[in-house]
Each structure stands twice: as C-alpha cells, then as structure tokens.
Amino acid sequence: MKTRVGIVGPKDTVQLMSEVAVDYKEQLELIPFVYQHAEETTNIVETNQALVDLWIFSGLTPYSLAKKSTSKQPFFYLKLNESSLMKALIKISYQDKLDIDKVSIDLLEEHDIFETYGDLKISSENIHWYKYLGFTPIQEIRDFHLNLYQKGKVSVCITCLSDVYEQLRTKGVPVYRITPVRANIRLTINAALQYWQTAHLKYSQIAVMLIKIENTESIESPHVLSYDLHRLNLELQSAILSFSETISGSFISLGIGTYMIFSTRGSLQEDGEKSIRLLDQLSLITDLPSNIGIGYGDTSLAAEENARLALHHAQNHAAYCAFSIDNNGIVKGPLTENESISFGFRNENKEMGEKLKESGVSITTFNKIMAVQKNLGKNTVTASEISEWLKMTQRNARRILTDLTRVGIAEEVGEEAPTTRGRPRKIYQVGLNFLASIQSSSE
Image (cartoon, rainbow, N blue to C red):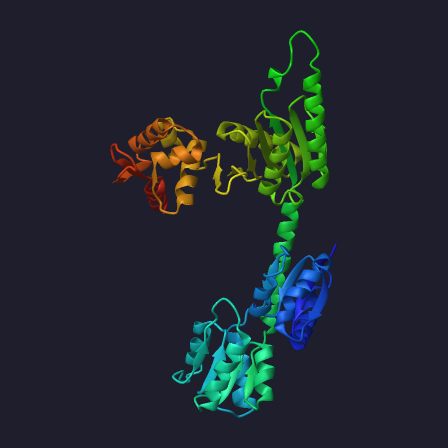
C-alpha cells in the first residue's frame, strides 16, 4: 500500500516537489495542496487529515502554521540552506547582473548566509539578516526589506516567503525568492518515507492490556454463591468490553477480576490517557483498587509477558495506576500521573552488574533511580526525592543510596537544609561518574 503524502505550498514549489516525487511513484501517492497565502495552511491540514498519512510543507512558515491544527500526523518541511541561497545569488549576479554585496535576507540560518558569502570571497559587511524568531510576522518581514531598500541600505532583497516576494514585487522592489533545490526535496521525501515505514511497523506491533481488580475474593462467601460478586463481574466486563471496542481490541476474561485486551500499538498510541479513562470507569463501578499493565511486542507471547511485568510494576507502585513496557524492555509509568519515568529492567554492562550484585540493589531499582535523577534535571538526587517518586519509605531510600555509595556506584556530593527541623539531607549523584569511568577504561 502506497504512503499518501500531502504536499503544501505555493504553486511553483508544489510543482517542483511533484516533479521530484515522480521517482517515488511506486512508494507514495502524492496529494498536492496549493495555497495563495501561507495562512491557508492551517485550514488545509485541518480539513484534509483523512486524505493523507503524512505532510510535507514547502518551508518553515507553513510547517509552523500547520502545527496550529488539531492534526497529530507526521509533519516535514523543506529546509532552505546555503544551496538554495547559492542558487538565488547565481541568478542575481550572473543572470541579471546585479550586485549581491548590499542585500537583505530573511529566515535563513545565519551561518548559511555568511559562510556562503565567505566561500564566494564576497564581503558580508552590508548584508542585513532577519532572524527567524519561531513565528513568521509576514508584514513585519516585508517592512524589514522595504525600509532597508527605501533608505538605500540595500539594492536587492532576498526572501524565503512567497507572500513577501509578491508584496515587494508589486512595489517595484528588486526582490528574489529562495526556493528549495531538488537535492533537499529528495532528502525530505526519503526522511518522510523512512519515518513512516518505521512508525507503521511500530504501530502494527501487538499490544496487550492486562487489567487486574484487587481483593475480589473479599466479596465472595465461602458457603454460598455470591450474587454480588457475579453482578460486579458482569458490570466490569461490560465496561472493559466497551473500552475494548473503542481501540478495536479483542477482550478475554481470565476470571473474576482479571481481564485482558489484545490490540495494536497504533490503537493504544495514547496509552496514558486511555488507561486513565478506563481506570476512572472502573472506579465508578467498584471501590476495589485496580491496576493496568500494557505490554508491546512483535509476538503475542512477548507482548503478554511484557504486560504481566508492567502490571507487576503498577501493583507495586500504587492502586489505580498503569505501567507499560515496550519491546525493547523500557518501562514507563505511572501512566496515570502528569509526571512519569521511563526505565529499563535489563543491564548489559558486566562490571555494573557485578557492582549491583555486591550492593544488593536490583537492576530494576537502580534503573528507576537513574530515571528519577534524569527526570529531575539536575543530575543529583536525595533519599526524599526517591521516596516520593518510587513510593517507598525514606529509610529504604537512604539504605539503597548508602549501599550504592559503598560499592562506588553513587557518591555524596553535598547537603541541603530540610524544610522542617532535623538533620541536613545528603545529596547524591548516582551512576554518572561510575559509567563514565567504565566508558573511558574501555576506550
């Protein structure tokens, strides 16, 4: 099946992209969208999402405008660089015989402009550059060029924007437009197709969601059939079955309080939000604690094993939370909280494995601490922070940090005053220096 690619831009650039895309006719179906003004991009993407798999835009401006839409499809844009500038300069200087030492240029990267002039052995002293600020005020950019030209500071204007080009041209300003070169178009198409093939393979992976309702045995009477338990089970099955339908999944009941859904990774793309929704629905049915484990894999067996391990992490963390494990063994969670961590439960470094074994700290616990330290963004961690993130006692967190310090995996790097009365808290740096020493010794 061909990848449906929507291309968006002014007429000439869309035409050029279409010509280059002929070489990819076996791989993609091109759907062109031509605009008169760049502001039309948002609406084009908004109203045509169902027609395409991914989008390629003629430049940074339509790309930025497309991001204002509700589409979550992959976006790519043609990058204008020194090759595109060189093409414009050749036209100005050699074809039209105009000077290129007094010009105004917008939106290109600074190094692309001044390195190009340096390569041409032309002074860049009178080059005026409009820096891209993350958005494109078209009228402001037009006035930037126009004012410089009217004051005699530049003799030629060079713009990346079709709207600015047309407005300056109608005012009689010598203006040239920078357009993509064919090599950049090919690079962008190749990158887009490679991304789509990788993403498509990833989204087609098997996903298993394992749902566990705890303490259902407390409802059951040892002497008589518990109608309340069966009523509860039917309500839970109905809610989970309805949820399964929304993600095109296959539902299996593994007994009262335990349920499994088979689906694909693409259907569970927003696994955190969907887990929250399902846990909320279950909490309305019963006060019994619930947890979810989501596993991804290339086979149903691998996905199910990952789901069971993810459920184990969720149950050990807290009630009403979900964890996921992907096919690379990366654990993510809790998915139901605004702040979550990602960590692995494997270790491929022999020296690290031996040190962890000596310390008595498991690989999973160590990877969790490293994930917390990274997520905090300061390369240090305290026992209090580990306790809060990993839902353990501060005493246990201090013991783990002490054990890691004893074998040289962690080190004390400072202290901080407590928020209440008491002894200062020790600040640790975990793993970083140890891993760096391992890497340097292996080089």
